[in-house]
Amino acid sequence: MKRLEGKRAVVTGGGSGIGRASAIRFAREGASVLVVGRAGNAEETASAIRDEGGIASAMITDAAVEENVAAIVSRCVFEFGGLEIFFANIGVTGTNTPFLEQTVEEWSEVYRINTISCFLAIKYAGRYMTKQGYGSIILTSSAASLRANAGAISYSASKAAVNNLAQTAANAFAGTGVRVNAVLPGLVETQLTRKVFEDARARGVESKLGHVTPLKRPGRSEEIAAAAAFLASDDSSYVDGQLLSVDGGVSSTHPYGRIAL
Image (cartoon, rainbow, N blue to C red; front, side):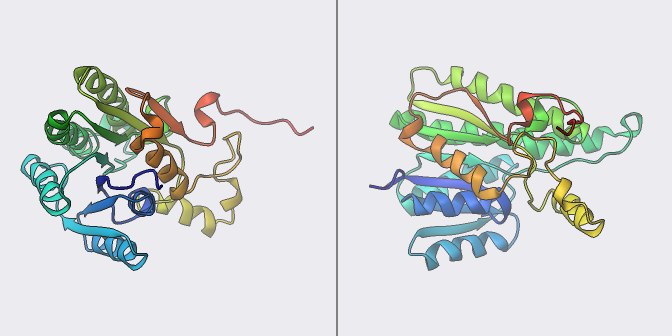
């Protein structure tokens, strides 16, 4: 039996990258998936799932707006008959503007998309899941949330807030059967990081990407999706309030220059 057989899932940011890989992985594991995105590529993901014989629909909306998140949950319940999994995955990187020149407007938008979206997912998915006494809510954080210099300052701070949100929400749901965890990807090629990869290729230094990790390479969206599928499944039934780093080991150490042997 597939690990997510008969379950109903929402994946936001499902049009590309980690979201698309996760939606496809969830469907392959047996879930019906509502793919949420802000552009038509969400339908492309849903279509790819259906082409493989899976069950999926697409919804085009901003998943950092309260009434939209309420509508996402209602749509999943109406169309698929329930909701057991919500993967809150939308994100934005922020800018590398010098710290003293950054604006409240930039920080507000980064927090709206990266952090408030997770709060809203927990609020509305949690309302439904607590009534049934079961559910898994997964938040996308980042390895950049743990230490400095792994991402833009506003991005890193917003993802650190996501980490605490996962922990505090897990405790807020104590005794309800609803679990909340976060997955912390390292460097992975997605829409958000594509310029980094393209610039490295243009300069002929692509092989150096991810070189500070013990695995000496960047990650793949499918590797993050595998971790999300674990957190979505009953294989993680005793995992709650946790921050699961999927980062090639970079968060286990401090970057340094390796001496050749």
